Amino acid sequence: TLRMAPKRKRISETCGGPLPRKYSKLRDAFSAVCAVSSVLLKTGAVCHTSNILPSASKLIGSPITLQHLQKMCYMLPSVLSIEPAQLSSTCEAGWSVGGVGDEKKSDEYMVVFKKLRRYLTKTKINKWSKELEKEMRKIVLVQHEHFLKTKCKTSWPSGGSLHPDFNIETISWPDVPMTPLPSHDDPLYIGSSASPEPNSSSIYTLRDTPLLSEKKRPTVDRFLEHLKSMSFYSDQMVHTRKIEAQRARYGTTRLSSEMVEVLKAYGYNRMYTHQASAIREIRSGRHVVISTSTSSGKSLVYNVCALASILRDPKATALYVFPTKALAQDQLGSLKKLLEVINKAAGSNITCTTLDGDSTFEARSLCQDRESYPNVILTNPDMLHFSILPRHEAFSPILERLTFIVLDEAHMYRGCFGSHVALVLRRLRRILDIHKTVYELRERGGNTVTTPTLSSRKNSGFGLRFIGCSATISNAGQHMEKLTGLKGFTVVDNDGSPSGEKTYIFWNPPLKSVSKDSKKSEKDSPAPKIGEFRPGMIGGVPLRGVPR
Image 1 (cartoon, rainbow, N blue to C red):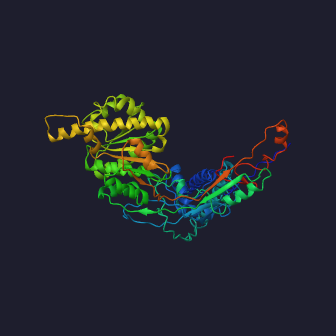
Image 2: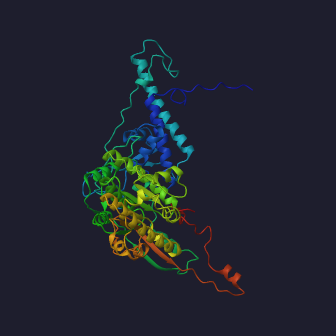
Image 3: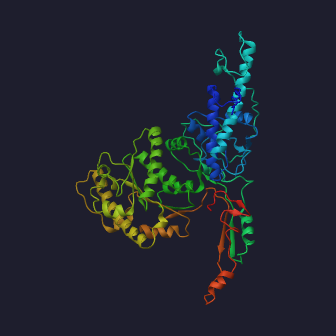
């Protein structure tokens, strides 16, 4: 058989050949934007530009701006578009310290893929990348033909390879209409309108954006109506309670100018009402327990108070007690980042370390050194009981200068474990009174060292303050008093952090009768079918972010 020779493709139709460097960067930027958007879509998040641009910039190692997205939309109008994002009223970004700091307004946009039914796949990304590359090569072809007509003196066959005198790097961008996008006037949202550089620390996270867009988000009421329409439902929902969403409430407190500058450099611009109240009570010399919701910024309170005390007295120390080693390690990472900013801004040398069963011999020896001991020690109750308190003379450099004892996740100290921790804390208080008395006598130049009596230890205090952090429990103050053996804990529970709407449902399953015909009754009883109801489905519509 005779085979026909393959038809030679034009430059605009082929996928090979060189491209201008800036065109190649735009193609790589498009692939990075699609890759980040696919992750956001799989997690059920909205593709906000504040989430996409920093992450995509890190992927390719060069900044991607909103103008790059507009060029992509111009070349692929049927695939990509940019629309203004509908910001949620509960999405707060930023803090305020005593009302100090500049409030900046920013515009938020989201990337919309028009030809997308559900998720972005690798096949679709490759297909759209080739379409974008094809449009770029059309621009190269138009520029090449213009070059042949105006500047080329010799004849050159059309549809062939590029002329050797034609420099593709001199190709300019087409006249892309950069129309101004509508801006937002949301006074609650604080951010940066410009896209940060790849190495910038101002990286937004998913919690700065609503999890689902308003149009695609199935409401709870709709889900409950669908649940009631199922064949297995027979008045199992006996009670429903809805808690309305809460907007962020901010407070003011007095901090040193150094600490304010440090917090602003670290990214904190405001403080919630419970944070400001707790700091005021701690500065007044009271024992405080903070009982607010999860992720409401409780750790910032004791970090600010402890580090401010250490800035005033570089010899002071603070003891952070966590119920598990994992929690201590988690807080250690965030504390080290904060200390880097503080030491750089204030010119100090504050250090921190963990003291637990996994600590090395060098770390334990450092905690016993009178010259280079760490200022902040993160430990757990077992380490206090088995290592620190039995050998308290060796850890005297830390104990005699202790100003704060932080009990994080205090609601976990209950039952037998809580009783054990309560006895350990009482023993710690007795030992601290002795070490602080000896330290004061040594500082005053006393010749004799006497052990303080029981009555003096009860009323001394020596400037030591307890800070408890707990979940939202009704008796936080009483719990801390029984745990530490001290009286007069100030409870801070005026939670000012934002929270979304919550719906609580009490589900009472039907009672199955036990009889000989139990198998038959179970077979005839209405029960949910797999095709009728699945978690994460409402009438065949998937709920994004809900496990199936």
